[in-house]
Amino acid sequence: MATFEKNNIPVEADCKKVFSFLGDFRNFGELLPDKVKNWRADEDSCAFTIEGLSDMSMKIDGKYPCRSIHVVPDGKAPVDFSLDYFFREKGDQRCEVSVVFKVALNPFMKTVASGPLQKFVDKLARKLQDHFF
Image (cartoon, rainbow, N blue to C red; front, side, top):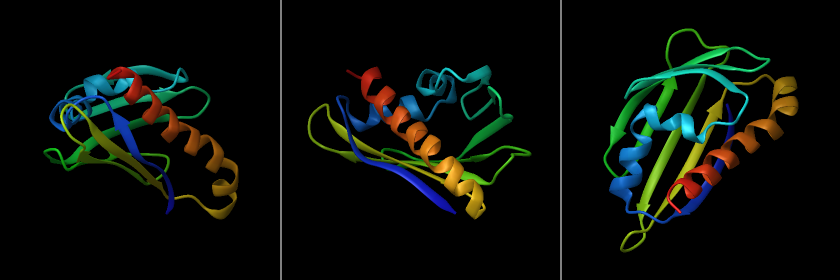
């Protein structure tokens, strides 16, 4: 599994508020890049199309209040992956979030997709910060 991560992202909100936001997929669409189309979501699952690629669906597989959220594919997915958020309280109205995206890629796909996948994780982090700014 290839791992793409952004650690210790400072967020100007308490962990409970950030956990609540990320723990509801209806909010997740705000964090995704413009290439995502046909966005559909309920609290624990979502489905969308990545322009020029394929359909994806995900579900929340575990929520551990103010500690972590674990996301996995829901149904058939073009690749096996997991997306994890880890939370750390950093004082009054501040926390840090780490985003870890693991995806099963063959060596060729890893060389081709590493840059875009890291940019995806970086964009999630930036949009999360912007949401709570």
